[in-house]
Image (cartoon, rainbow, N blue to C red; front, side, top):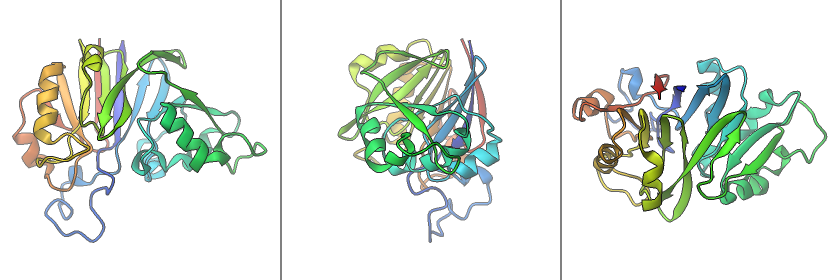
Length: 256
């Protein structure tokens, strides 16, 4: 199975550059230091599956040349992962788009964005989505692709990471429950959140993310959801050979 992944965004909830900030990262001339909010596009088995719709989703989609989507997977309901949902409208002109998440995510869409759930007359000016619930860690067939949810901790919340074949995506992770480690065996590529070097209550630090990556043992690991504390080039040079810093527009291919 081949899984192609494009990083649409690799930044934190603030994005990078941060508004009003003149730090070395926010003023860097290296385009790899410019980070939209974290999101990826997965292409496999002839299907295009999006993970999360952050505030820049429209810009991400234009930059990546996205013309179609078969489904959207949501990791959780925080604004930097959900609040671009309105820009799904262009993918729902003729049919509803299935979106997937855990119970909290599905309830939050109904509460905050009820107008996307087909309650209004079908029209191109509104997105039309249909929510589907992941139950725990049970895999689901999504557009002909088996998707394995991977429950992880994000502070006090349990959110979803996802595995498709040899690829797994664990953004906004502050802990991996013991039962989820077994869902991460034999990976070709792992993507995992690494906010900064200093500890944080709801995100892995870079050191914690690297430790988790080495325990998983994927052939290659990419760090995402980075703050403006780290220059891409400096951080990349400090990491183990199998661990890299993701950046916006990066394309990787997992084979397994």
